[in-house]
Image (cartoon, rainbow, N blue to C red; front, side, top):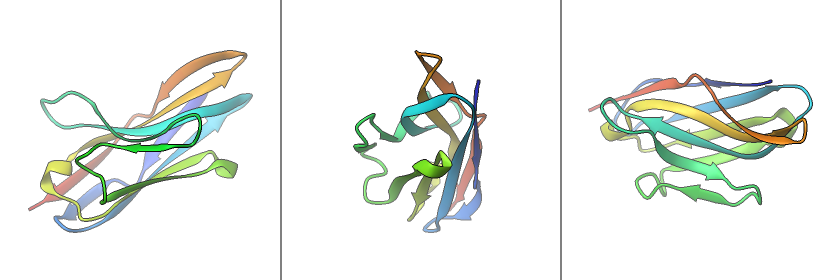
Amino acid sequence: QVQLVESGGGLVQAGGSLRLSCAASGSGFSINAMGWYRQAPGKQRELVATFTPGGITNYADSVKGRFTISRDNAKNTMYLQMNSLKPEDTAVYYCNAEVTIRFSNRIYWGPGTQVTVSS
């Protein structure tokens, strides 16, 4: 089993910054890809930023130039630096990982962390 735990969410004013972290724990696994997704009230979950298995980063158009995704492979931890936050960034942010464990690929999600941006 692999567990993902997000942290760093909170309440911030528009124009402010937050840094989210996602720590993966467990044993006998390797991470292929990781990413951040978010879900606002009444909306579908959407991609925010991801690392592909080759380490290439992808960003939603709505966050390009404001958000930066990064990884510390030694710590199995992923980060999302969010700058110039807007009220429309308000959502629950989820960490996602595709891992190989016991020779099979599996998808895991964290429980989410709330980000609220006030105007």
